[in-house]
Image: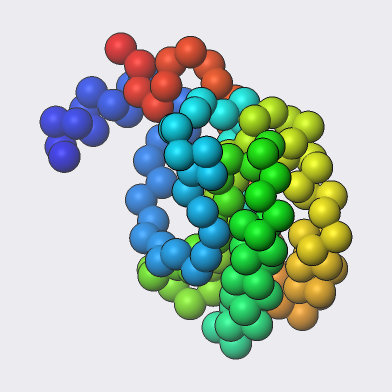
Length: 141
């Protein structure tokens, strides 16, 4: 790993995210063909407490089931996770055909309901990033 880090860090645009998560629900590749996406969305949710995370986790699991059941062709991946490193973090990872597909999913009734139901009592902070193809992949020489 040490040799890998020496070569990887100088060419990485985001650095390492060395965090450990367990899957709550969702799907990895809806099409099954490993298609390149147009945009990825990574959302880290920091809950107010361990109890708050339990409530938000249950809602997030139900949301993942609803997104999977919808089978929207614009949503290539939608996975939700809980941190193994602490008792407050949750994460959402999505891959979409394009930005419009991402925005369509984020405007869905179930998604809006999750945020509205969780934002006051359970969520302390949200960190979010979106990634688009840059022709370099994750590592670039």
